Length: 116
Image (cartoon, rainbow, N blue to C red):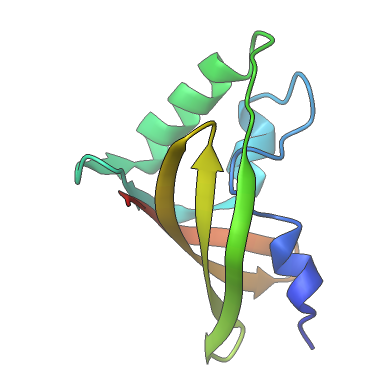
């Protein structure tokens, strides 16, 4: 059912948004119970993440990045875990995202980034 390429095309999460993407774009890609653990170890709610993304993507910004060591693993049913290394212009972090396939497409349930 799942092609590795489908999930690879979604990562790095929140960095592949089209120019001018608004809050509604990010709402569609996150589950209502989505949460994130940032590189600092801080827990972020979906609302905080959506507010931050809407602000960040409301103006042009430089976002150089490279993904390596990408893997996807089926957890159960239609839920998958994606892991990878993200190099953001020298700031390297290990990332993981839990994705679930729904009738409306892929939605993220959880994301975590840990500095390497």
